[in-house]
Image 1: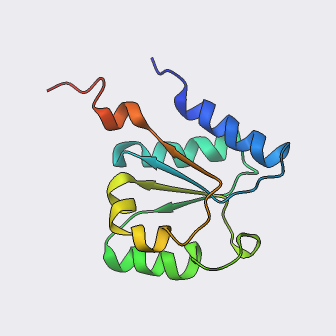
Image 2: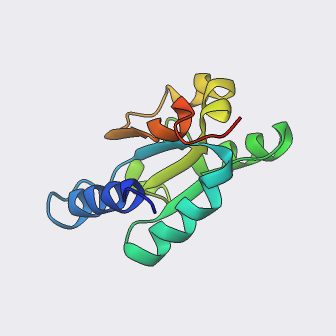
Image 3: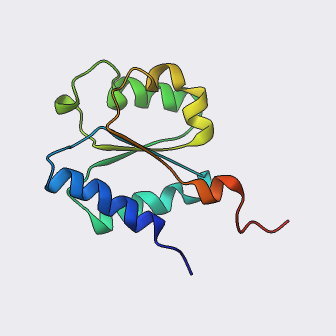
Length: 119
């Protein structure tokens, strides 16, 4: 049974969008194993919140950054509100991600700390 961290985070970002008029950009750092679930849950629980997944090999990420993430472009001109990516990808692409003025950064800390992972 989950603790509801995903839904709580999506609710917070949805509240920011709907009531505070803060469209973003926001970034959510999650383990690779939960990335697809996060994308599915954002679409399910807050369809007005537009998400983009930054994942893939070097060439795929470079193309996504160039065409979709677009550092240096005004947020109103982007087609996403929330960037979903992994810790590892964020470290690799930090020079591009640092150019974006994030409203919120969310880190799925329980999974990152290894809580609940059996060895």
